[in-house]
Length: 595
Image 1 (cartoon, helix red, strand yellow):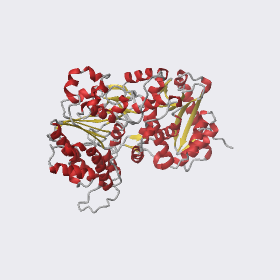
Image 2 (image 1 turned 90 degrees about the vertical axis):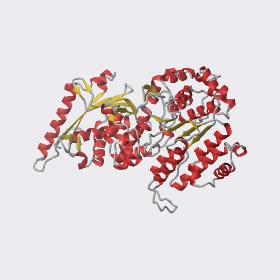
Image 3 (image 1 turned 180 degrees about the horizontal axis):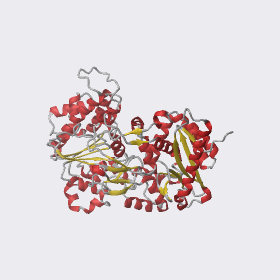
Image 4 (image 1 turned 60 degrees about the vertical axis):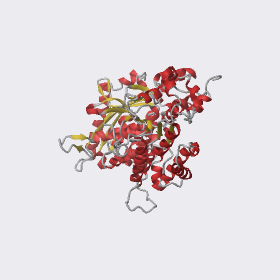
């Protein structure tokens, strides 16, 4: 890569990146669209590491009256073509840019200390105001207390509005206020709400309630009817409910992942990725890069790539494809919620590549988690673990896992459930799966029986009916199907795991299609029969099991369920047809002998 621009991973300072000739994906038209948007205050919600912080830095460098030397940084980018706009607005306004990503703690006192530190740093960056003859003595006293972290909570709550007022007085210009990761303190407070608050609290407010109350003042005073405000931009992951933070804000608009406006301004578009791959001579890897890091849809723009993963892959491409974005953050909240809410069947559908039809809440209120489990799908989508693919029924959205990288998260969730909730040993699962794909069916049968015996309970296999219609909605066979899929999820890196798909003359239950065509493919047909009855002799029971195994195997062969594997270039002699018959929770793969 001689004479090529280098990548700067993990830094979100626009000036540093451009001045040092690092590669920059041009998002500068965000500046123009933001300024000319009808709403004075805009909120962009996108997953972590999708370019929000860098975009805010870019906006700051363009407008900030204190960064006159940054004008040349934009000369090679799209915004420079808007000459009249640049002449009128570039480096003409005071800009406040504060990030709340580090404002977190196990209780309110620790969180408030973090607020004080960030606000103190912000004020120190503007300490020239202490010498300004435009500020009053009282203004300077408040300024000094905030810098020294001796101000009271009310003064910190008003600090953004106060600083904007001081800047307007000094420069005789209204102010642009940028707030990055506004939702971090809120999310952290919710996760730690049950922790004790050390100080005496006569009102008995929780950590979460105290955080919301502070944010209502901190952001509300800065953005709501602030005479010093020109424009405002906030970024975050979640679309926290208006009634919690943004109540009664005027001229405010949220642009989330479903909005068509600004939809190409975060993440990398297909065209941008093609350009960067061409620049670094990596075009031959494009199809695999798509599978691993593409797949998001924001608004009406499809094929959005994860920028964090793209730049890491380009830098370290000799190491192959890895889950860079997944490994860069903590998804414990996601994992715990899915396991807690018991949506394993839906997770397995997602791992298979199926779409699910779900409502996405515009106004997310964390307390509602206690009563509305369906909020998990909004949480997953906002955080980038699912993506919308199209509008579904009744205003819902069709959601799916975007790519291979994120699929690892859901596979890990299944594994966590198996290992943690049902205490299944990972080694047994891996060994049993390997027995299957190596055509070691006797060993597979032994391991499979052990796994099922350790994981399935009578309640799991009981029939479930709709309370209103009395229709049977979940049969034991459904449960066996889901459990078997869950156990095979560990193979998803090497196999396409498909379920209930049309092939030949019908629908198979499960098919494993290897990416490596030299490996075995597998077709599984699952049947269920009643367990041995009290008055049933052993011979009759064995005959029932053996007959059902025969029926299942004949069904595979008669309907040619293996056709899809053949269509995927798997030779017929490399296809394993497996019948599995459950009698109660006992699985049978081989016929029972009378020995």
